[in-house]
Image (cartoon, rainbow, N blue to C red; front, side, top):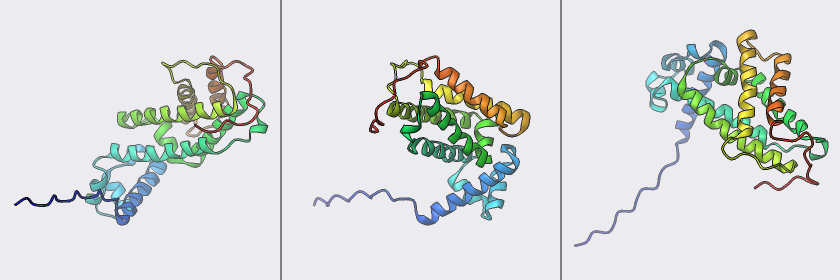
Length: 219
């Protein structure tokens, strides 16, 4: 006798209680990271801060690098969001205006989020976090490229190099230098970072770039 096929189980969404626990762990890790840097993080210190058992942290994040990767994703979500905020088209007189708006938005995130500074700009030597940051930078570069295309008629860009992602990485190098020297991004180094971004983009973008009559629709 042929048995009826057993219906396949539908993948369950994360339980609300689990998500609350994950958020609690990430909040605790972010607080420790902002206050004491990467060296302060351990599964036990995060568990103590979150007032939960270490086994609960291990259940969601089996290692400190896994925890830091999740925090890196959160930080880059904020960067992605800032690139998706509309720009006043009429206020742009040239592509450098747009570049400065973008850099100022990212600097605001760095100024307001000590954990972001520790993860992206501090020298922690964690390969997993560095690789995750670079992958996220590629996504940010694509968003920045799309934002420029909305407002300006861009020339043909190289295919083998992500110019906009590299521009952002170069700016971050300057901000990281400021963190090493001053433990913050000083106004002078913020300006230097923006100049580095503009200088690199200027290798591929002419001084005058035709501005679109109105913003192009997002792809």
